[in-house]
Image (cartoon, rainbow, N blue to C red; front, side, top):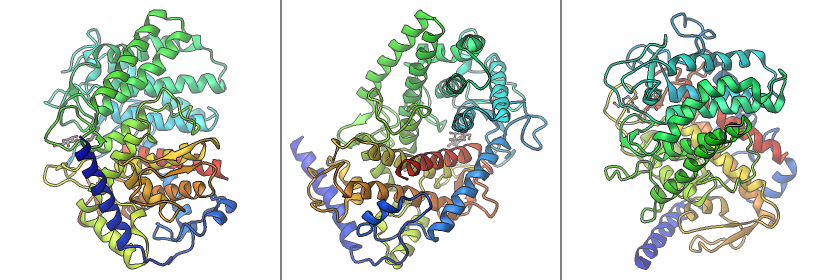
Amino acid sequence: MVKSSFLVICFASLTAGLLIGEFSDWRPPFRLPHSPLHSEKLLQKAKPLISSTVTIIPPEQYERWIEHQTHISFEGIIKNIGGYGPGLEDVMRGAVIASPSKSHPDYYYQWTRDSGITINTLIMNYADNNATNATLRDIIYDYINSSRIIQRQSNPSGTFENLEGLGEPKFKVDGRPFTAPWGRPQRDGPALRAIAMLNFVNTELKYNESGVTYESFRDIFDNVIRPDLDYVGLKWQYDGFDLWEELKGKHFFTSMCHRRALISGSDLAQKLGYADATIFYQTQASYLTQFISDYFYDHKKGHLVETFGNHKRSGLDSALFLGSIHALDLLLWSGKADVTDIYPPYSDEVLASLVQHITDMRYRYPINLRRLKTFESLGVNISLVGIGVGRYPEDIYNGVAESEGNPWFLCTATVSHTLYLLADYLYTRTSDFTLKLTEHTLPLLGMFLDKVEGFDWSDPSFELKRSSPDFDTVVLRILAYGDSFLDVIREHVDSKGSMSEQFSRYDGYMRGAEDLTWSYGAFWSAVRQRKLVYGRIK
Ligand code: NOJ
Ligand code: NOJ
């Protein structure tokens, strides 16, 4: 045990040393990262330490692109919703199609997961605008109504009465069941749908623009939210397919979503006076806490693993960061740590997984190597240069068939999202906080600590006090690194800002289903978090 962790330390510092050693002589070719959002005061302090930008275009242009792409992404989601998007006459009102692509691949279906996640994005926007946007409110109600119908369709996974039907992964766009063979059930869907609806109810009550009370939502709770919560509470121990629809088993992403749904669900159940449901959801959530902590962190590997007991894969997976993010109460997130959160984006375990995932992806795809070389030739410290990120190292799905995997827009955006949450968490710490490293987080946090006084790559016992003048610099570097991943997305969207599912590992051109709703949602959500944290710094 002692021996193996010693080896890990040696290996970590060796690779870290190589990276830093090789690129320590760079000169700053560009101006400092600058945007109207950056605080001038902070930047002045940080100047000596942030030595170059990690986006290839000038900062003002980058900010303009972010604004523009954020708008396009939001529209991209709406365009894929029945009743709102053009040319979707055959789509049920309020149903979200995964993509308009009808062949190679055929994604012209409504997936419970994609819909729940992307409707939740709309709900975040709705909440950010104090619940005033009536069009968004209509869309969300249409989604809830379409969910009510979909939930009641008997399908190959089961029925509404035995609840198993709720785990069916996808339906036809008009709401009829899809009956061909598929990886089913997928148990994350009901949780994600419930999380979205719970966020909506809480938003309505918080801003109360339409004069609602808890009572106003009793019908929705009883007939739409509650079946999903009961499903989660009763079925979370059973195997199901993962979010990528490939492996049957128990999955980190799925369990993390289950836990969030039950925690938020028990809260609303209590408000509505359902004592039994409140306790049932609470109890199951606490079992899930135990289950997740016992089964998904691999101490030998020093990272989380997505599917429990799968020995064919490393376990590194973008699903880990998606799971960590979707398990947060994003509606209430204010940078403040919720002590009850488990494996939040700023936890040592998630950060250790993130750096190993990025390191794998960096050298896996030729476009990443080319990007790093370009920056290197410009004299930039490439350890803080973003790259295209795929689902997981062993992926062979090319967007249409099986050959070789590619980087995905949604996975790349999710890395930025994780980094923005980390930056937000650190920035909002009180003055008594100290950032501590571990042997597993050193390779990531070390990149942000480079040249900070007293920091040494060979010493994981280094600590940085919140009150140190270098602390804010570290936060800005984390943000800049997050920006650099979004910059990769900028390089691969088309001239209209369209995003498919993937971009080719060889030439960077888009691959797979076009206008993937989830790609837009993931981008929009990452930028939302970016704005929140820059807003706090200002
Ligand atoms: C389609 C699934 O949606 C995708 O996630 C999976 O990788 C491929 N099928 C495997 O062929
Ligand atoms: C394949 C992805 O693996 C899965 O997560 C997604 O739900 C479907 N495509 C639809 O976008």
